[in-house]
Length: 427
Picture (cartoon, rainbow, N blue to C red):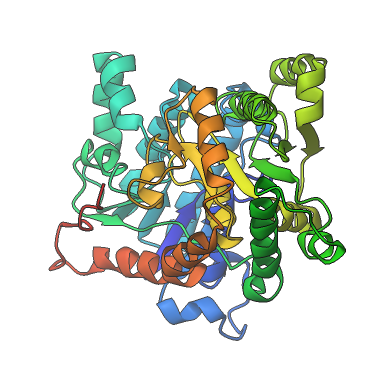
């Protein structure tokens, strides 16, 4: 099978571009830039030849979703490159990631599909974002809705990340739907040897502190030296809709509760990520002029590599109270699970499907008081080990690539069922 991947890879770095990069590398790399005599790559076992058009329209996160003439010109060039690949390499399948509910992104979809779709035998839509179906029904005019149907309807295959996400695909009447969860390389293979012992030691030390017991020097050494500080990690783009300010307010509220109870511990939020707008950075700086917030929050900036690993290893909780428009199955939550971090997040889009039934860390959106209560509950009841097991069972890169390849090749098998839907999860 020959597959034209019309999607961008980092930079700028975010969950969708990262998953495209993993997909491309995992399926054997870009054949356009690979010598015919090159030895086989590990991803070649899936039987899919990838030809990549890197549709990078934005240089920075701040530019994503903004429209200007240079982007239009680049998009036309990318479409021309895709059509050239179609005839140069005999690629018959076109892979595309539809827009979330944003007008400028919808215009991009129209242009790409109107220009490219006539040249390819098969069209594959991979729904990384969620919410387009509802947005089309509630926020655009009939004419725009009709043009969207004309451009994107009856794709040969729609790949979705979750059951929630299926509504977006079904809206455009695809011939097949497959559910394929995201997956990443294991970022913490040494979890049981290095991370878990420290997590357990900090959990035990908190119990001792709440029981009024004194800690020994050995206790402090095993816990990293500060078991009385519950470290809460926010790791995402620093945006209001991603939940940064709700996380900040929640930690302040939790610390007030702990102070009223004369508890021997306090919480500290470590905020890691890049600010997307100057207005949100200004709002953050204003909040930090309040001594209560200044004591409760540390801003780490953008972290990667060793800095990111250290933050995920050393923190005690992961807080991500998002209500971002296109949020679906975020990579940061999968990373937190891989490090065995107890998670506090929102009942938003597909997020609840990623977590156990009746999980205490799921809260309503825009509710910092609920976030605070969930963190106070989890800090003494959850070591996070089961999250590591959930990662290994559901979100590894190997499982993701195998299911993705299995879904992709169905377009060349006319006898395959129209849809595969997992059994409903317990609630």
